[in-house]
Amino acid sequence: MNPDKAIRDYIAHYESFEPLAPEEMSDPVRHRQRYRRLARAIEGGRPDGILSEDASVSANGVDVPVRIYRRVDARHAPCCLFFHGGGWMIGDLDTHDAWAAELCEMSGATVIATDYRLGPEQPYPAAFDDCYAVLLAAASDPRRFGIDGDRIAVYGDSAGGNLAAAVALKSRDAGGPRVAGQVLVYPALHHGEPLPSWESNRDAPILPLDALKACWRAYLRDTVPDAYAAPLLAGDFSGLPPAWIITAEHDPLRDDGLLYAERLTDAGGQAEVLDAAGLVHGCFRARHASELTAAAWRWSADAVRAALAANPG
Image (cartoon, rainbow, N blue to C red; front, top):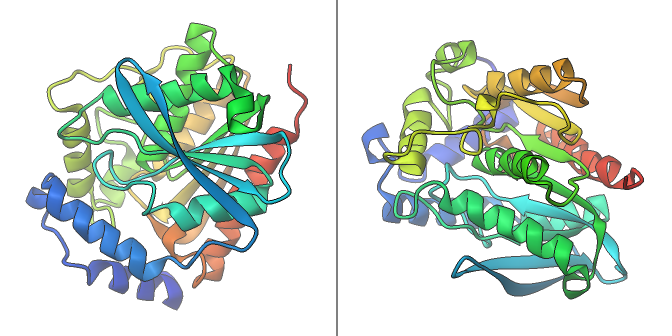
């Protein structure tokens, strides 16, 4: 492994924040505190001209907090649902605030970020249910959110990529709202026998294999996963929205994204992949320091724009 200096510096910065041993990964309180400190230290502020509003979506007796980002001049804009990463057990609206605001600025979409419930306290399907509830709410009451309810894409990184793909799958299966596209940033999609990249990148920085397995344990607890927990378990990949998938060379999850793209195209669907050489899991935090990462980040924003530019139908 020989990433460029900016990525090496990011890895060193990340790992300086009280690195956790694998057996501590399911300590939610300490892990969340660490992640919030990391986000505050690395992320910049929001771009100018982006407004935000905190709201909530009520479903199944739960109020799901959301944050809505829109351009000052936005009117009836297409929508991108943003599901943050963090192994299904860390992350919130604030840890991904600048990211979501920049996505709004660069894509032109109104972005709705979801503060879904976290494991291990609230294991699967809590996070998935919350994210799907936000899709239903946005599509059924677009005037409330100031969006075009016929043009909704989903976007997520890591665990958020898992949730984005799962929401698209559920909406197809249930005859739910049309999802215009799914933009998945180093997504976690597979559960079961290790894929080759799980082993070849088992000691990768940021997300070594032991940490990935700990995240899955926190998310699933005692639940046997189905396709909405791990979308690569689906038996049918036809009729799913077009996908834009970013994978990182030094990431155990690399093959998750590559295999998902293969399954979609084999089923007659569309998938574009940016298999980014030299990058690591979680690298989008370094988008302002690393040109390699910045290029991948811009690709993801352009993918949202492309998904939402298509005519609904």
